Every structure is written in structure tokens, then in C-alpha cells.
Image (tube, rainbow, N blue to C red):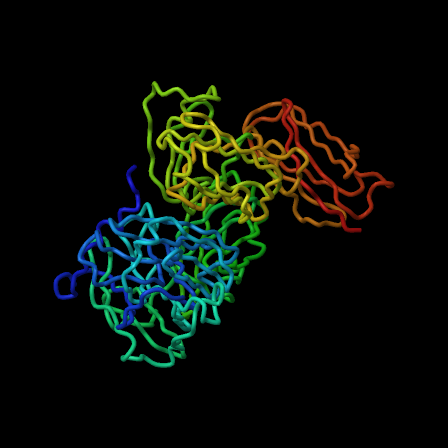
Length: 603
């Protein structure tokens, strides 16, 4: 099978700075002068959060004479992910054994301790002292060559792995607080798994210890930058690796943040920037203007690069532009004024069906890559398509199972907050025995299936569907992740259905022929305005009912043409006996389709 992670295959020859030093971007690497055979390797670090690049902590046999002697153990944190780290061993033949591992924090915003134990029989990775993943297969025995400890920051030339690179994200910084090394001393140690490790040394990075470390001055084909000594900086008991342009080296930032995208998500507008923002300017409402609407509030999200805007006076359907100015980064550089057309959120009709490796067919949406303004898409992976004559057992949708996205890290889908049923569709059309492809599935950071072996479950060329109930989405995006155990995960299709018992700031049916907006203000006392937009002309009715499902108010709007509408609703409409403070629901219906949202009365 074609291995999509070809970035390793093209990096077999490390070149000196003198032979290839004309690149426009400059990165950094710090490496030990000494090599180590086995042990526990620890780092406390905060990675750089920029798409198209990564920061790392790893060991590598720099005496390798070619692919047949390759030995490497990796922790790689890709800047495109706010909730994921990647582990890998690279063994002779440059065979990759990669796992993408979900985490419930942003590695770019917090310091965390990462470690891996390397022994003759296993490699295990740890986060904050807890083992999260282990490899024990036969390839571990080929990791038998002494390796140097290394850390670097760079921009690979492989967008299917790290995402789209743009110079606008520069500069980027990865922060390292300390590094520790423990020797492998089975039976006599006092640290690590089974107390098989003993402390050897640690470095707090109070200064550049030239007897232990050296700075990289090289590059390779597939690396979009050169490593330069100026970009490995020691400051305030931190080692900072910098990725910069060729003119502004080191730990400095003279470039203003750039406003790059605006997207509607659950009746909010998300404004995206290239770098971490100053919280004061990012949350100054006056810095955000939408002509024909009012920006009520601005909240900087936890990733520090996205600002969530609460907006009134807009149906979220008609086109609008967002003008942003005077938003600053952490180095006090102010963004230039810029207006961007706000991308609208697709109103899906449930069930949502995604053909995870092919075109729109059989009612399934075409596969697409996730981006800032999209509504769904994959992260990473390649596609294999099998012959149209291939018969797939246990399904009438053979066409969906004849193509697969393999090596995918995961999928994201923008949804109204609520609870969903998620169906994952698989078929093993390549491997012909059990134990050759095993992986885990995570939904919203929760592992919902461990050690899935498709062939062991149903055999070859046979559809397998796993259904997961009660998947709660609370941030407007459904996160689906795959964690490799053996070889690369694959997926053929995804079906998402809304739980009819879940009513939470979203639609029960997400109709495509009209859109009901959240009332404003909410909560309210006295009166509130409810707006909606009609895409398909027809008869429309409006209802309000309590949590018991009792209909308290109903209004027939009659026949409505396409357009935007509003209704002023009063607590008096509930009746004297039903206007108590509390939660109520309001709905709009037409042609047997209903859209429901929640309102809160405060008296």
C-alpha cells in the first residue's frame, strides 16, 4: 500500500548549510552531542500553533548510512491541530509506525511534560506522567542503534500532512522548559515503568550548555527552511526554537497579525487570525464592524487565534462583510484594517452522509479537506479506489465501500450543539488476514472503540458499520479521530443523525427550505424578537411550548415568499398562568418539517 507520509522517504540525506542554504525561511534545531541507547527521554514544552509547520522532540541515529540503518523515535506536534499530538517510530527501511493521539488541551497554549521510554522490547509514550500509547511489535527490536536527543521547528513541504503553508503565519515559536534523560537500568532503577530507569542528567536551559548541545546548521529536501544558529534562543530559563523569514531572525516579532477568514457557526461569527492575539484588543467590540448588523460582544477563544462574535440584526443568510482593525498580537503589532466576506454555514438536511473517499453519490456528500471556512472535511490521508466490479458483502451501497481514505487523522463537521448518532462505515478490501490493521476511534475526545480490526470482525470485501449513540457536540464542531495501533486506519463513509430527543440551540431537522434564528435577546423579560428566513415559498406556522411539550402559543403566518422575516414575541402571549420564568421552546414548521430552538424567560 502506498504510504502517504512520504516526507520521511525524501529526508534520507541531510545536507550541510553550505550546500543548500538559499531557502526563504529559517528554522532551528538543538541536538545533543552524545548518543544514547535506550532510556527514558522527557521534555516540558509548549509547541508552535501554526498550520503548515511542526515542533518536535525526538531521538535519531545521525550515523545512519541510509534507509537500511534508520532508527528514530518521534514526538511531533503539528501546528494545524489544537487537540492532537503524533507519535512515531521509524525503523530500518524507513518504515513508519505512526499514531495520531487526541488530547483534551491545546499543546500550543500550555506547557505539558512528554516522555517516551525506549527499551529492547517496547517504546511507550507518556503525557504528564501517564502512559498513553505503546508499541511492542517486532519492529521495536530493530531500534537498536544509539540516537541523539533532538528538538526542531520546521515547515515540511507536504501539505497532506501538516496543512497549507503560508508565510503570513511567521514568526512562530516553540518553547522548551527542560529536558531530562534516564538510563535504562532494569531491576536496579527507581523511576519510570516498573522502576527500570535511573536519572542521568537534566537541563533547565538556564544557559546554552555547549558541552552537551549543538545547534543545527543544515536542511534536507522536503524541509522548507534552513536551520540557523540564531533561531535557537536561550532566554529566561527557556530554550526557544524560532521559525522566521530570512531577515528577522531570532526571538522577535515585527509582523502584525493578519485577519484571514470569517465564518458563521451556530449563529455566531468566528473571525480567524494568523497568530495568537492580545486579549484586550481581540475582545474590544469596536474593532469588529458588520455593516447592517450589530456586533454585541467579542470573545477570544482558547486557541487565541479565533474570536467569537455575537451578532444581532442579521438573519445569517444574506451576505455580509466583516471589517476588522486594530487587533494586536502579543508583541503589540496591530493588524491592518481588512474586510472579508463572511462564509455562511451550510444548513444540512439530516441525515448527513459523507462519502469519505469519493464524489457525491447515492445521497452522500463528496469528500473534502477541512479548512477554516468549510463545513466538514478530513485531516490527512490518501485515497484508494477499487474496481467498479468489486462486490461488497452486507450492503446495497457497494460504491461507497469501494473507495477508502486511509491514514486519515480524522474528520470535523460543523453542527448545531446537541446530541447525535454517528455511524462509521468500513470495509477491508486490501489486507487478507487479521491483525494487520488495528486502530481506535475517538468521538469528541472520547475513545468509543478500541482495537478495531475490520478483517477480524467481518472478513474481506464486507461492509462493517459501527453506530455510536449519544454523541454530544458542545462547541459547534463534531470531532472524529482515528488512532493507529497497527498500520494505518481507514474509513469509507460517515452518517450523522440528530437525536430527536435533543433540543439544544439547534435544529431537529435542520431544514434546507427555511432557517429559524435564535431569538434576541435571550434570556428576555417582556419581549424578544424572533427572525427567520424562507428559502422555499410555502405555508408557515409558529409555535411555543413548554418542557412538557404543551402548546402554549401558535400563530399561522400563512403563505410566505422567499425572504427574511421577524416576529415580536411577548411573554403575555404565553397566558397569565404560563408566563413564569423558565425554559420554553419555539418552532417554525412548513410542509411537515419543523425547526426548534430554546428561549429563556426571566420575570
